[in-house]
Image (cartoon, rainbow, N blue to C red):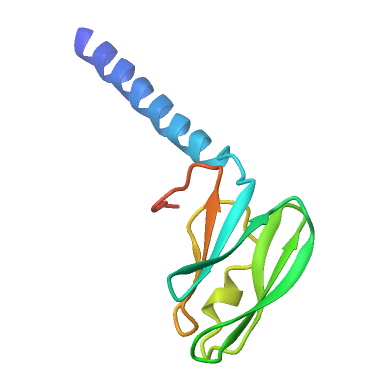
Length: 119
């Protein structure tokens, strides 16, 4: 009888811990700013609450058009061959947006970022 009670208690604690970790990941605060770098150099710090659009030209001549809208940022046009940077879509926090061929990095500031998520 005591063994079943302990198993039930430990299962409940495990389940609550698991649900709590998912809740923390889902309620991650949005960033207020984003740093846009090209070729390892900071080009611009962007306020994510000001709608804007601008184009960054890389050292190799490649271009990325970056759009900020409704507190989120995205690469909306790029001259790179794979367009992985565009496939990220609009983001407000999380992992960096990267365009390797054009050496562009958009890094979020003001929010805790997650290195990896399982889901």
